[in-house]
Image (cartoon, rainbow, N blue to C red):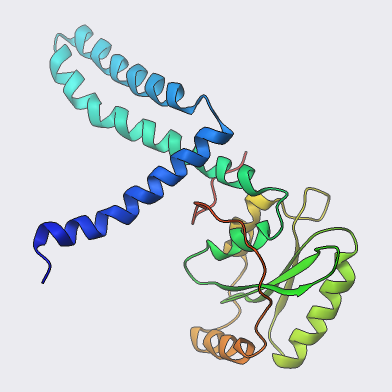
Length: 224
């Protein structure tokens, strides 16, 4: 049997590993991140001490602003880690699938349900909004997407299908906004209907494709 300490260690280790991996990825993409984190922490803390000095209680305010400084630093790092995670996989084969599969709540994604020799591919996601077919690749992916839509309609007739093309051109969805785009889609299926669709499409499956690995944000960062 596990002792209480052993159980706590078992729970905390994966979180620490995730944080460490996120920091490693962020440092590669943004080498200045260590100095930025230190600077933000110290600046926030010194502001608190300065306010305390003006009010005659520097030690008290220094103590109060210590956790606030840590929180501010963590929020900054979380945002930077999110953008770094996207930057580290942009341009890689299957980057869209990696982002879609990082959505933990309400969606299940089958990557690479259709692929061409040019490495154009289509991924299929199922959620309360219905079925979403996400394409990534060259301009020739439109035909592949059209074929996959017809195939999906045969297996799930009447189920709403949304088409998404990943890219930075007009009418496309940038990789870093992909999660947010899916999560904003209006719900059109009940939970029971969604489960039925998932079971129906499970037999269709997908292909085995290399998906970029690494810490991906489960919630898309805000993009200005």
